[in-house]
Image 1 (cartoon, rainbow, N blue to C red):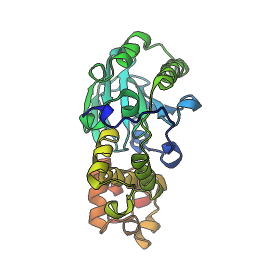
Image 2 (image 1 turned 45 degrees about the vertical axis):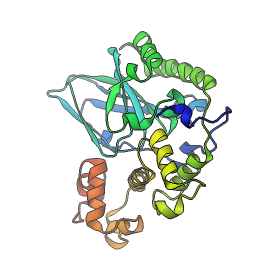
Image 3 (image 1 turned 120 degrees about the horizontal axis):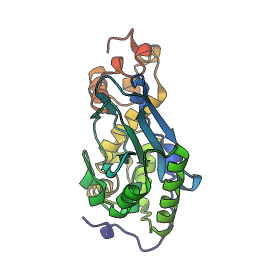
Length: 290
């Protein structure tokens, strides 16, 4: 499927500033072992409607064993590489479940997290082609891959990394014609404003058929509107940090559209990798039988 199939004829701004409605969370980094740090740092303000953050995951000293790192589903696409091996750079597509990485006992990864729809907008490639897997970046965006390979090294600070990326992406965005399809971005806005809790068939009436909307979501998001809504709902639960009382008395899983507790647990585990009781806010759930 080609980008041109969806491309509009004029250069316009994205009407829905996704960042104001959606802040993807990666909570498992807080469970990192001693001597492992994870940092997110902001882009130039002009890039923030497109890129959620730059990030760095690294060891502060050698670990005694390999490190298992879990990434929860967040609806985004990331590029990443090790600073001491910048020629080996990768793109991670939209994932509809958690992903587990086995890392060495020393590492220094740097990444760029693109907000939903933005990587396909910038690099004119169908997100669906990259869904639920990672790929060598050179086969997808060779110019960016070469830029990383030739400009990064293990001695750079976060500020130096930020400046390099800012300059590259500001130049790229200035040259990019964006497809500001109101049917797509209208649907994305509805999903985000409803925190992923909606009837896809009834509530996403943006002027096109279900089939056409599915094709737009698969090209720019990487999966269906239904799957994206589920991840948005899951991400908003993480953001809410529910207390044990709210889960026990208010039945949060009903409030956000789950059929029952078992449905809530199953979907949560699929996106996070563990049950709610074993997740980040375990202290808030330790008295709940989840």
